Image (cartoon, rainbow over all chains, first blue to last red; front, side):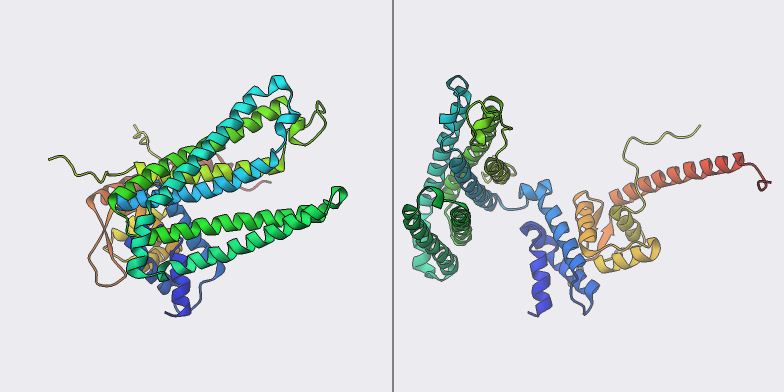
Length: 311
Length: 117
């Protein structure tokens, strides 16, 4: 494969799998004719990227109607897993940003926010249990896969995640040890910057682990009953992501209305706008994660069933 | 009495779908040939992404159909529904062109003749 062939193949990957299967060869042939002997320019590449993303957002592609039913359920479940990863990261940012919120809120204003906060916690636990059960359901197939084909298909994603994870563990240990040595004013700007770097490393570890899980799951030969279990767990996790996102937004709206100073770490009854950058960031991440999870749920639920038609 | 406009969005002459249907009205063509023909008769350059996005929509709506081919460059042909759709689009554009021409003639008719002096 020439360098240009690899470039065109990479551009084609912006299109959804079903579209590539149907039109991929034709599009590559047309790109070759258009470019002649030249390399794809930046405007050319951007035009293909945007066209591919437009195809991905068409309702037919979002629901993956063209995939066989079991493949569609698997892809939907894996998309929900990606949404769950975003929800975990967004949830951790939210948890860190709201460590002492209840102490700053007047007793009479606290009921609604407490209910919303409790909904976040309950949904997070339910989602985690669903994801864990889904992972456990694939263990027999994973063992069978390794026995038959060895570790080779899973080695690269596993090693990548292990390296990133080990870096995160070592960094955490060093930072915790150092943090115990410094007090009060020592925990100033450098400490804050290091904490942000550490948080980014943890997020990278989570993303890498999720990507590895998706990559490995795609290589497994799963029995039909396991696919159905995955789909059911994925629907539960998707519902959990939506509840977490909705509850965080509700909590923020209630607190901004009743005790805005508590979101800015100010003195009680000192006014405040109710704006908080960390919470805004977590909300954005949670809403995007909910959109991804719902898209996965739509793929699981819509389209032709794999049950045989009644005769 | 003039025919009232149909209740659907008016066709645009530079719409990639209309350009493709117009090109295929002269006979089946594959992607690169479509792009070349469209550039010649309409002066519009359709890149691969835009062209194949429009081909996808047209095929999903049943207005064009792929023909068998051993080459990667698969030719497409207009279906009967595609002919009807193109005919409707041409009627829309003709109606707009006629209205525009009539109004221009009216406006020119109201202008004072001769130079300002």
